[in-house]
Length: 386
Image (cartoon, rainbow, N blue to C red; front, side):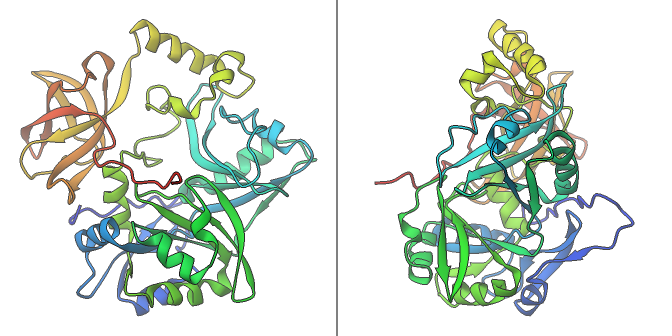
């Protein structure tokens, strides 16, 4: 991924780019800033430990600090907040216990994905973390469809930091005691330097790690405290993209959008088993049809992983072929530092989606051999408890 810059996902091309709470901190640490999701964001850092591949590898072996403050941090509060949110999401929210998290999807009536998001039961309210590029559309959708008695709050004065890697837990435990007791997809309230902060054990790299929400006035101090540890280096969007690709995690706006349904996207795990039949949420009728297609072998297309031969990566938009027949398109792709070869995600005709199917990707006018592969390409290392 060393030559890959994430696309500018700014919602409005003419809108001025916003600055992250840690904008000055990033520049002081040698970050190269690029437009992304309406913000100026660090893609990589200068110095001996900088560069996308170096940051990627450091995350796999130690711990990296990512700034994901462009994400939308929302709260829903009200007596029936969980029940009302379930009308918009296909996951079970009402049975989510305090301190537990769940991955879910905002859907259109036609079953398309408006956004993918994380929902946490904090106890006093439901916390949602949504993608930065579409957070304003998400907020508008929620306000339109939730009843007036449900209060929606956007914490736009909060930062969100992600500490990811196999040494993240031991580092964070020393800085914020008690966080090491969290397991994957759990969260809690902690205190640091007299301030309350919200910490969840999750992330977008496939590695063990944490996301830390705190007021933006405290973000630089916490970032300083974390990178003061020799086990922690800052990392940017480039490494985040290559890590999530190896982990087989979709990126909204590339691998997911309103024209893609969760079944075709291989996100059936996000559909509560009980609600697959009972319904009661936006898009259920369409999704039930896709599930029937899957069971009957008539699903049109599926998101799959591809392993490419050689060293040349296939980027988004590259055609996927079986002989002379075009059978799909790459939606994310790059060179995997961990595997030492190119990998990609693509949507292809479902009848050709079986593991091991030999295909070709068209890259720079050449056809490169590619093989359908299970994902993740690199195994996840989430901490689920001892």
